[in-house]
View 1 (cartoon, rainbow, N blue to C red):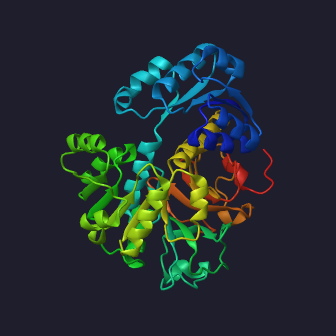
View 2 (cartoon, helix red, strand yellow; view 1 turned 135 degrees about the vertical axis):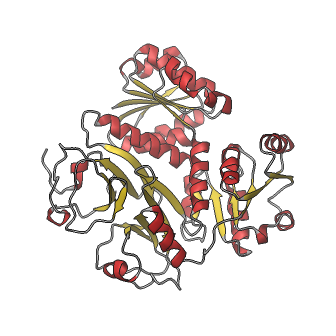
View 3 (cartoon, one colour; view 1 turned 60 degrees about the vertical axis):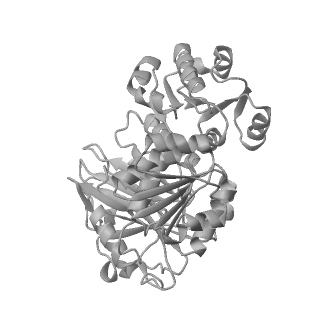
Length: 456
């Protein structure tokens, strides 16, 4: 596909890097000279210096023949104008980053009037991910599939865990028969495990199962016997503003520490049930005074990655049961690979996977077996993909054990009539099923790609 990306900040760069790996024709428009140089030197794509909403710049970048324009500058107005201009030039589809709450209220009108195909809001999506993690405090990450009929959950194997030293083939008989270990991260290696694989301390596992079965498994095999009741948040930015009501609606008490008086007052007015504290939460004495040692969960969500990391580590040292850390920069996340900070959320990664999922579905618009949902695991080294099966799908009625599945692919779950099935080799795939696979291979966009040497 010919794709133009307006804006080369963290999100624009991340989207450009991922989509260029999948052999798309990518062009980036950026007005900042430094960012232009960085992209030119690191990615093999075309770069144009200028305003992404400018008619002449878009025309020069080829918007008249573009399949997709993605506007992800820091200004909502620029993104909306970029999409409108691109559509006037002839671009087939547009995606806009829109973060302002007032604009979000008019989202339906904006999409119709401006011809926007999809609107992304990284901060709101990040808040959704955090709220899911708070619902599963024993998990590092949580992602729903098939309208929440299946849950993808990440946990770490502790030294005292019953999973330590367990062979995968014994997992169903000894631990949980309706939950599947779909992927393992060990050090720098990502693995799609087979039956002879043995788990060890420090392994990060991705598990898939229904909400009920996953909840039962986590309660039996983790110290979290009870849910989160109190949440302490550092930082009152956009992510926090989207998260507060979700926390309150879940019956949790929430306290936010913010050193900016204006932001603090705005949230006080918007969310009277939340407790707001005007203070510098990067100071240990402030965190202690505001109850960090007694809080069930701590979220570091300031705009400064270093502050978030340091305060999160401090929370862990005090024994806080659940610590969630928002980090923007990928290189910092890589540096924390060996740390105990398990629940790290990255807005740019969350936004990128939504866009990549959409691009793959568009690429196979006439193929009804294309990706319906996608989720990155283990810093993007593993993908979980959901496919909707129809009567034209290959392999219908064939037992899974008879399929020549690629070695880097696992069929993790089948959702049939609302029921999540953990498949065995004798199970078959039927029309109407949602099938979730995990893979260490990138760019799978059709269900039949999971079978070795399949010829269409």
